Length: 282
Image (tube, rainbow, N blue to C red; front, side, top):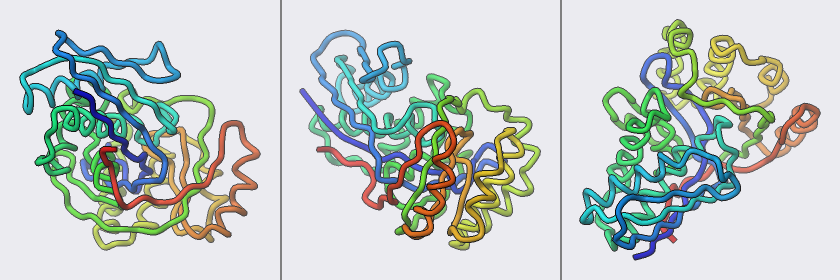
């Protein structure tokens, strides 16, 4: 009983830490999962290239899906990712989505709608403590593709839209785990986050993203120079999640010029595009 799936990474429009409303957009970089269910007790997880990484999230995803749609059988799960871990690019959400779909594929289940599948991954993330907000905004963007706006306190999808941006990403060498973020400090900017939510729900995703970027950079103690360097020519720019990555969106020519500045810093800088298809079995 084997299954495979992949799910895209995502960038931030609005971080849900401040007011419970979040927004994210899928990007064309992926995490893939392979699941084998063999009747053993328990689930053994592996993350390619990271032998010491915590595999509890992907293992819990398999357990939840097998309990609900199978007979609780165990097995193995292995993920491989183009997305750096703990970089603010929603690698955990992508891994959870890919694992849930791969487990459904292994079980031969093809009747589950993608929102319900997404919520199983969100439940797993909450169970193992890798998220503060539940990350339904990040997970929904990865699962459904395009840009989504969500109420993370009610697990409600408020809006979904398709955007066709080029995307520039700068990822510094350090890591940042969202579960370690200073939540109380982030909640102090709730009035600004509520304004960002209104902009996103009005379809002003680029402006929302930029306001979010400056507000959360201040709350998280992150640099604002990458944001200032992107303005005024990009469509939007923000710190992604709780960092350390920054993303800028717009047209390719503008982002190629910005890349010359961003890539002078330590880390990696790369160009990609938005993704509108979401997660898929393969």
